[in-house]
Amino acid sequence: LVEIFKDRGVVLATERYGSAEYWKYLAKDGAIQRRRDGSEGAPKGNSVIGVFKSVFLPQGYPESVSDDYLQYQFWDTVQAFSSSLSGTLATQASLKGVGVGNQEATVAAATVTWLLRDGTGMLGRILFAWQKGYASSNVEDVSITIKTTVSRVTNPFLLLTRLFADVLNDIAMFMEILAPYFPACFTLIVCSAGVFKSIVGVAGGATRAALTVHQARRDNMADISAKDGSQETLVNLAGLLVSLILIPLVTDNPILTLSLFFLFTILHLFANYKAVRSVVMETFNEARLSIVLHQYLSDKRILTPFEANQREPVFLEFRKIVPIRLGVRLQDVVQSPEELHLALKENNRPYLLGIQNGSVCVCLGPEATVQDEIKVMCQALWLRSMLSCPTSQQQSHWEMVHESHKLMDMVFSPFLKAAGWDIKRTLLDWDEWRVEWKTKSN
Image (cartoon, rainbow, N blue to C red):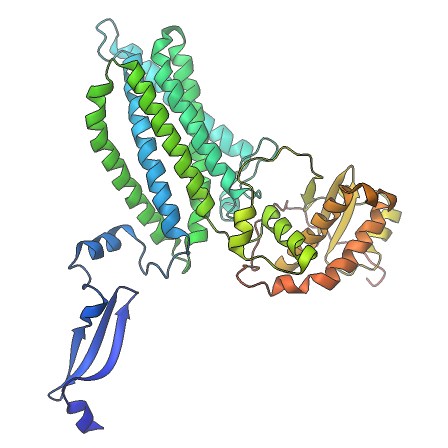
């Protein structure tokens, strides 16, 4: 064996750096020589591509990130670039409105207007963050949505918040562009735009944090966040260079300004739609769980995360549905000892399920696991579909609840074995109430 190792050209071992570089250890004249495998790419740092990856992509890419990372980041870069150009047009209009280039305008008046705009934006950020409940514990739950009737970051439609924030940002910039043409209301308009942008900042920060957790495959959230900041800086720098060409063209030309703004806005919204559509979340929220459950009940097939994400609605659906309230108080589920007895009938599970005031309500015990949360949500979704069916009105509500227990006992096991789905956590909108109830045994 020693004689073989002394031979020239014998490969003793191979190694790689991520998926970019491959090296071989060869035996030569009694020593070990390390040599790069030339067929596998250039060495680190000696090529433009290598330097670009090390600066702008997370370490260990692509193994260290989700499969949808590159596609999402591409469209996110496109939307950021177009938004940067629109922001330049809005900034030029704002400066013109406060008096830049106007000999009659005073520095004090311009400063006051600018401070009022920034101040209302800061106040709006604080109020919106408080009202919508964007706490750090909720951001980690990774779902990003804002609806007129729902107000927490953990709500099902993760993708809708991103679109909402960007549409609102475009509206704010449009207001700033129009503001100089309404001098009597200039301060009011720019302050309102500042409030809108503050909402965008809160919602956008929540969505970015949520997507970072989704993209991290090695708990490398800090690295992904830092590289995303570098990508954003590069995009803004490119937008700045292009803006230097645009500004002389659009100065004192409102028609061209508005035309370019609408062009950039269309590109911005299209890129955002493509970006949110490229995200493939492997965790269950209400929408995805509903899609997967109904497909399984119809043909016994469990959809993959990609299939379920493609079916998940991006825009608001205005059809009337039965509300599902998770993690409620006991009095929201049962309102008498008799109803408590019915809720506990043939139920040794760490949750109680009931139908009150047209809503499916779930009361959770402190010992409930994530699997219990998924299971009871499946029951709640089935009850919702039954309540929406006219033929089911002949059954009492408690009969439907008992039937849901039996159904889930038969069909729920496959969900725990669903390939590709992360069942260690959920994105379901649970409130914080936890209840311990008495049974005959205790």
